[in-house]
Length: 279
Image 1 (cartoon, rainbow, N blue to C red):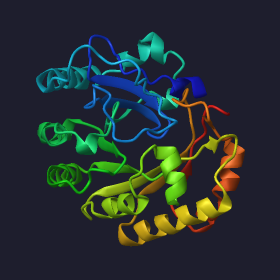
Image 2 (cartoon, rainbow, N blue to C red):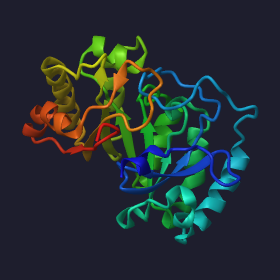
Image 3 (cartoon, rainbow, N blue to C red):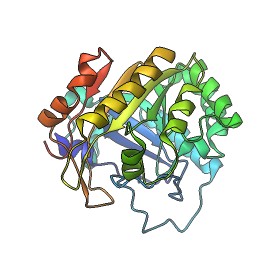
Image 4 (cartoon, helix red, strand yellow):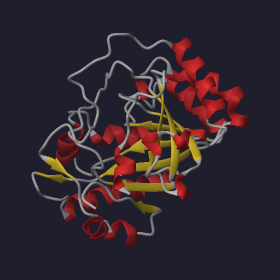
């Protein structure tokens, strides 16, 4: 089953900026929009699967992305996509188009094409599944990003905001940035109240060691503050599913992940756990 989720190739047919994957967290097919085609990201997460040693020779083109998206929308109205070799092992329950995810190879909340993309999607919303914005939260307070979030809310879409740590020290290790985690929390809290909000947390072993009890306690306190201020739809806790950028991080087996996260579960937060490459 895990090999199905390990396939997150950004290429598809003749498209460059649109790609379908089978998603653990979406529980079906997710159509990705890669706004950060040049692989620019303001985080350097050691568990990231994006190959940042190789870069495309061409550039992102908004009009081409629009044309590719319109083609993909029509194509995915049928079930033909599941006949492709890359999806031959997909379980029957996952053979459904669940969402359009704006994510890709970088951070969409700081991308200048995010707002135009939301404006393009809005008149198409009636014929689309759920729209998901996957973000590390760094750009959520930007004026144009706030406008994009308001459009996302009007379409009934959802923000999946990343929060991989509770303490500053651990945050710097798993995000590869010196940005303050308190700032990340505040930016998550800045999103419109009308917007559906999920928190996504990737937990992993660092140099063979899983997150400590004190780290989980700090994470729990942050989650409680966010949940009290903006009721969370879900908290998605997962682990590494594909080969990471750095060898010092590794996946946590699901049984251990459940044990580590027991304090979060006991706090009656809307926790969902997902297995990874260790299972």
